[in-house]
Length: 429
Image 1 (cartoon, rainbow, N blue to C red):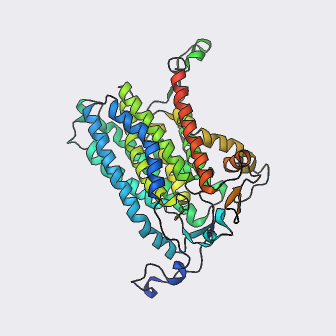
Image 2 (spheres, rainbow, N blue to C red):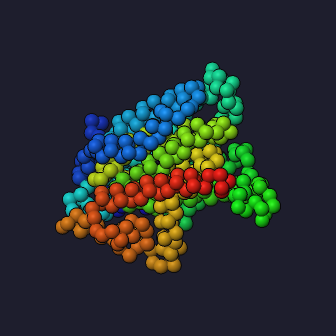
Image 3 (tube, one colour):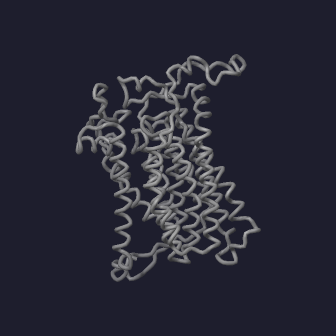
């Protein structure tokens, strides 16, 4: 449930040879189509709040000049990716409407906004632009002309895993779009990330050893444990969790993209802090940073259209793509424990949703609040997820206010993670 929508495929589209070449979409598809509006003020506010900590740390922390050049090159290319998403979404929305891929916003049912055809699966644009940026960036970091290997371990050692990461993300983007088109059942959706994660699991040649927490070393009698194939199983399960958890905590305009941006910015802060502190993990965190900067930039481009009132739906295409991107950086960057702490709201939402997800209690197709068209406010239902829980705990509110509350909770969770790491530093591991 990546969006609060009722899907509609409509009538069979007009064959290309019968369409007017000058028309973007036929008259029926264009009827009640939304005017795509960019929420610049809201976007700028969220971008400043989310990115300020990372950019300040990047400016003030001591980072090697060669590595800083690579980071800034990636940042410039990411900004270009943001512009590309802004330019391409209006174009892509016409094509998906032409193919009758649209939905009606359930959270606006009964109002004029509930009758508008909203183009869906526009997360595809974000995913494609992200892949273009990250693939082109290989020229600047992995090419023989770069002598970075004189200062750090050979960059080509990361090339195989970089390709594997991009293959997983591309695979998940494709499977997410398949889900949007075919509307797959939940039992199938759960296995999609397992399939998409196969390139990473097969290409992974890193350590499968975990460090035992200090409080447990004395009773256990050892400091490290080699998990072998169990570690790869854990990697696959992490990919499944990340992709589905973003997809489950959804249903409000801007929520899916907003939580991804906040988690990604938290990952960036963690990466730049570790790069400035440790030479041993520098390359792993630089690898993560090279993927997270484009993810934040392209996601902000999508959020410009998806913020309330949403002009486009992101679809399962985006939630699966974003979840897999976060999973691969956590795995290859060797900070999966920290990543899971960033996912605290998603973990709580999953645990709270278990009775409905596993059919212990009845589970409707859309576990969404009810909308009052007279007041424009949402009221929490008895369905078991954080969206409804927040409405029941904190009272009725508008959809935009609900999204802000949930994103604020995401920020607090990420802040809690950093505080916990600081308090346990030197004691836990």
